[in-house]
Image 1: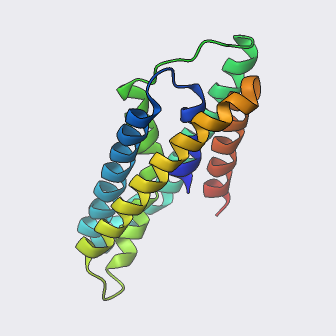
Image 2: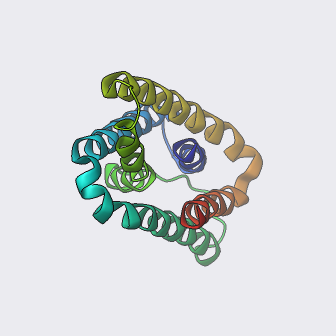
Length: 167
């Protein structure tokens, strides 16, 4: 759901060809989620004690920072009628931030009799589809929300960050 929310937010501001943006975001988010899941599964319970307390905090701080930056930018830059191009660097950062909590999911896979490859496949498909759908929804709603889209996206990112921090 965090990838979906971020995709909606990014979809509202992207300048060109939303279909490709949805494809790229879907790939970035799916790849990062699967890699983090596999990392969590591979490291197992040995590193769980070291990484687990910081994974949620790092994800929360990154999302709160990105959301705050979006809100700050919307006020400081004034109403921006010109759409922007989303860079691969930004997509990497956001994909990393939204997938950190997948490490904990990878740890828990060791507790159940579930194939890590089956779980990874299902997660990759769902994240890919939700990210693409979120981008398209953001592209459509961006015209209705106009100047408030960046603020709304920033608020959603911050709320997800606070949710991760508090849970």
